[in-house]
Image (cartoon, rainbow, N blue to C red):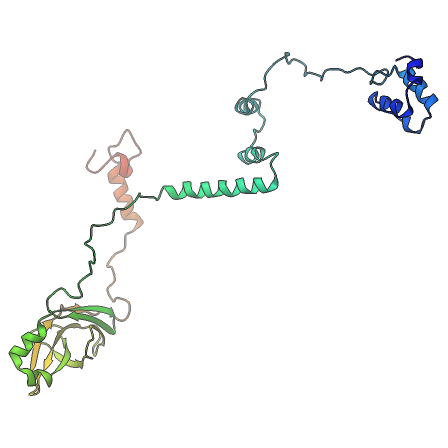
Length: 295
């Protein structure tokens, strides 16, 4: 732009033109000096002496070449002996450029996904529930008179029992109402060590509370055999058996007194190894390649 054209413009227009041309220090100049500055620069919007150039290209790279994919770059780095980017670096690279809140959300979802993958190997699928009738209830009894006996430790036994629904009617018909009313329910504990249940060594009775279904029993003799009858003691002292339990043996109080006559020795293991190794030509002998009886 010629100097005469610049002189016809206002100072505001001149300053805008200087700013567009990339000039510096124009804000402190008057109109005359500003016109001289713009005339000297040519007022083309670019600083004198400077040219725009294209970005430099790496030596040996043809124009228009495409960037290698990450997998090719990683393989190239491994072949050249350089350490490729780790998985942790790749994960961090994925989150670059995201807001911190977004990166935290991605981290949480990734952690949950890894946990689900680990738990999936233990998942057996949806288990089908058995077909039960509406209102199904487990029965309170098995409909028979029974008593079971178990060992808790060397000093205690545990027993549980149940009666058939019509047990009261059976006893009423057998004993009569008055006798049944004056009878007491007891557990008769038999010591049957070295004997059978029909001829026990000794016994003692335990009165049972009404409505009880199980009982803990403190034994009188340790390291012995026991069985139990549940029944009624009648007013005349006689005993009526309702059910008899299984027989149990209490364990020793201390360590066992039995000791192995001979422990396995290294010499015996060597003999076994030599037997399995003998005759083997294709393997190292032992358990997997010679086998028993080969040779």
